[in-house]
Image 1 (cartoon, rainbow, N blue to C red):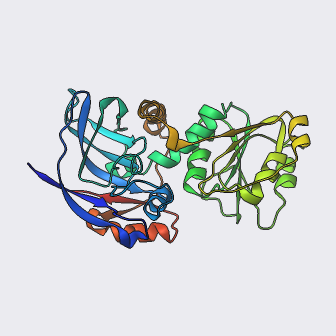
Image 2 (cartoon, one colour):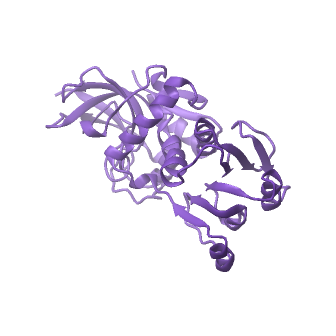
Image 3 (cartoon, rainbow, N blue to C red):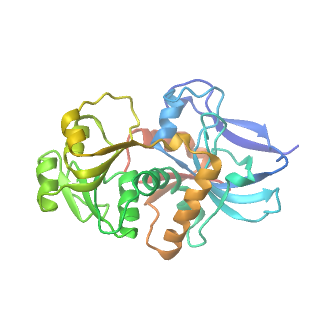
Length: 317
């Protein structure tokens, strides 16, 4: 039986906990495919997973996002594919491996205009942004969307998606730099969020908020909504927030949570298929990436753990 190399953690800890192991290449069963991984991204959530944040059973192969080619199974040999897997790296082994097996119904075809490295960088941030704005928020053309953490991976993806849907984006960040391309930027370290949003919307407030920060920004975001507005909340760390309930219900506001870790395989495929058209048209663009060889995985993890504006992608031969 042929062997493959996988990245694994046997116990929780920093990136140095990760090690390479040799395993047998898995064989697909009925309705499954064997994927040869060409590229796989390292998300901040992957670093948190190795640290024990998600309490993944060990030993475990991390990695949520990938791009590669179907080698065996289900009559789809040779297809170039991309995406994420439900519970990848947590409930089941993930994509930081030379090969993995997955149900065919969980696999989406890669946009031909994207390289493998670019395609591998799309998954988690775009799935989160799409789930928030399109699926949960039901964004409409002509609406104004407030996005916190707009310069981050999810914020940049959300800005592109909102523009594709012909909505206006007000970005909230800790500086006036605007790498996301938002239509307006609010520096939350120096400006009052609610006052600035009101000033930018003729006193009405935003139709929709995507809050990926939470904490001290949660209630100001809620107050920046117009009557009947919707706020989508995503948080990667446990936190408790408070807000004025009377103002909330008098404003007929809606608060919606989004959990991409809870998406099923077919749901992920449906979302990736919907986004493919945006990448094929060029209205959605992959993030700036830095590539690393698979052998450099621990160093790449350490770079992500220290914070980086780029998306970091492992490439496999």
